[in-house]
Amino acid sequence: MRKILFTGVSLCALALAAPAFAAAGGQAANDDSATITQTSETNGYASQNQPGQFGGSPTGNTATITQSGGTSDVAVQQQARDGGTYDLAAEGTQTITQTTNTSAQASQEDDSNYAKQNITQTSNTPYGSTNTSTTQTINAAWGFSNQQNATQQNNSGATITQTIGLTAPETNTSTSGSNTQTASQTYNTASTILQTVDGDTSSGNTQTATQYDGVSNASVQNTSGNNNTQSSDTENGSGNIIAQNQGASSSDDSQTASVTNGSNYNQINQTQGASSVGNNQTASVMNGSTSNLIEQTQGASSVTNTQIASVNGGTSGAILQYQDNGVTGGLQTAYQTDGSNNQIGQYQGNSLNVAYVSQTGGSGNIALQNQGGTYYTAAPGGTVEPR
Image (spheres, helix red, strand yellow):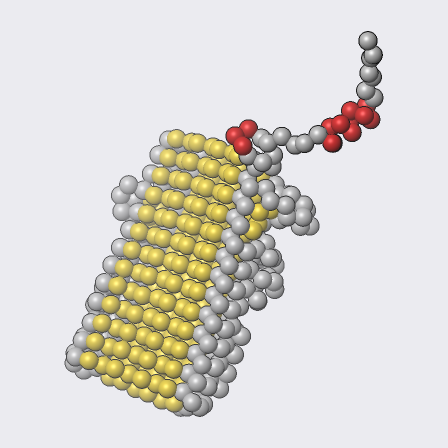
């Protein structure tokens, strides 16, 4: 009988040559999964860390935290933060669910492409939870095809903050492309949504914010680059603010904002920077009550940009549209239907611009147009006056 003696070197060689086996459950060897569940905790704390791979190899890691029936619980998730110079991962999923959990805090961070971040925070009664916060960050200079989703219900003083791009104090001068940010707040009061896609050459990103049945809430959306889309919708509330901002030298960007069945003192502010081309702004207040304001601004030296605003019903409201000096080929359209004592002010600089106003029904409504002279301004419920 022949005996075969394997040396340490030959054993290592066999190990390296052998095919890799899949992890349990059919996952790839680097598809880690972590789960934490906490019930009826006070000041509970849950943290999960899954480092990425140097060079950006896909990891497909999954992290899940569930906290229910607690008070002031904190959930933290990190993926791909291993301290390497290029610790970028891909295809990871982070999920945090906090229910009937007052003053809950949830935070997610990832350096990734094709990543998904999901946070849900709910209470059983309207405004039943206070100072709840959601923070989601894709902290990568070249992040693309990432998804951030956040939902809050029945909160007071809550915040949702979603960021794609390098976080402060770093400045992202690279591309963030085809990313999606979605945030929703229902039955919230004095709450805020802040969505930011950083990067001078970012393109194809989508931001969506919705706030329903709330009071004194605000949503703010910021992008730079081209072919970006911002959408914000507020329904059945009062004292709410929608602010949408797109940077200078952008092209083919779009902003859409609507207030439906809003009672009093709602505002829509849309801004697009200087030297932009082919951008669109659309805003509407439907079935509003009193002192609602739409203000649209497009920067100097812009070309072939469009502004459309419409108001149906309501009193003492205002539409203000402004295309700065040097604007060429701009189009401003404003519609007011029914209502009373509403006002429209339009300003355009330079040449080949078109301004159009339609007012139907109602009483005491005013329209002002100026091409190359005075810009009009007003606070909600105030008089449209020259700036």
